[in-house]
Amino acid sequence: MRVGEDADHEPITIRRIGTEDIRQALAQGFDDFSRQPSHLVFLGLIYPIVGLLIGRAAMDAEWVMLLFPIMAGFALIGPFAAIGIYEISRRREQGLDTAWSHAFDVLRSPARWSILLVGAILMVLFVAWLASAMAIYRWAFGDFVPAGQTDFMYRVLTTGEGWALILVGNAAGFLFALVALTTSVISFPLLLDRHVNAFSAMGASIRAVAANPGPMALWGLIVAALLVIGSIPLFVGLAVVVPVLGHATWHLYRKVVVR
Image (cartoon, rainbow, N blue to C red):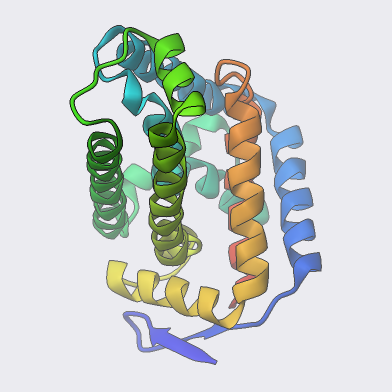
């Protein structure tokens, strides 16, 4: 199935995959992680540190109600944040040096402007999600400002308004996550690997999801579950989860797009 063309008019061909391909991609991602500990420590620790800072800021401000949407929003911008990890997997695949410093080679990539454009689109999506989350909160609770995180959680879990917030908020979050997954699941690896523009990459990603709805839904569930697990112990688990998922995404791309 042809899903677009690159700058040289070479067709991009999408193959159908199954659940075994998802398992293999995760296993290969973990293998990349285990074999490259030096750069993974450097890259992985960025995410829990940033998460702690954002979480602390949210709890100290009156916008404690945005703490969960900010945490959940990591999944929206994660594909862009992991761009350097894709590069390490690409280099390892080609037998090149995989020192962590090469994660920043993407800054000199011919595709850097397309990468930034797709990243900017994901950032806009992230901001739109936060705005939607705040609007849903105002719809459910009006102008009520919780005294702190404990007060906020009590009202969310013990009131009708709180359960309405949970249901509507999760439904909206699912839609945002679906858009992010569909447009970016293979976009960044494709941009690193081949001479395509941002819109061709996103188009190929959309068609890849359309061709593999079941496996891609499973992939999205696995990503969401691992991010939640990694976030529970004060985000520290993300130091392992994010690199593994980043490497696995590269291998998923290899399974979906025919060379």
